[in-house]
Image 1 (tube, rainbow, N blue to C red):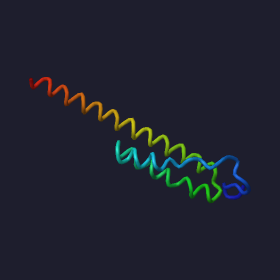
Image 2 (cartoon, rainbow, N blue to C red; image 1 turned 60 degrees about the vertical axis):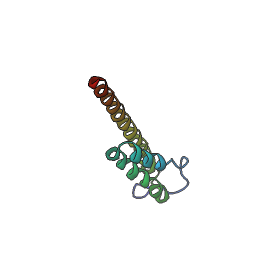
Image 3 (cartoon, one colour; image 1 turned 180 degrees about the vertical axis):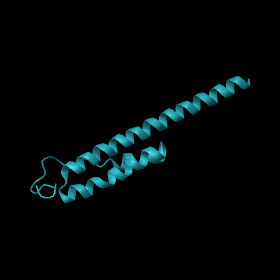
Image 4 (cartoon, rainbow, N blue to C red; image 1 turned 90 degrees about the vertical axis):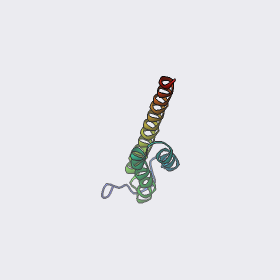
Length: 93
C-alpha cells in the first residue's frame, strides 16, 4: 500500500453508490438528511477508481445510512402531520 491506497486487484467487488436512493430520499423525504447521502454516494466511484477501496466501502455505507435516515425522518414527519390533520379535523366537528 502506498499513501493509504492499495495497488493491485480490488479485494472485493465495487460497492454500490446508492445514488438513486440518495436522490429519491432527498427529494421525497427529508432534504437535510438526504444531502449527506448524496455527497457520500458521489464519493464512491472516485475513491474506487483511485484504489481507495476501504474509503469507497465506507462512503457506500454512509450513503446507505443517510438515505435510510432521510426516509425514516420523512416518514415520521408525514405520519405526524397526518395525525395532526386528522385530530384537527375531528376536533372541529
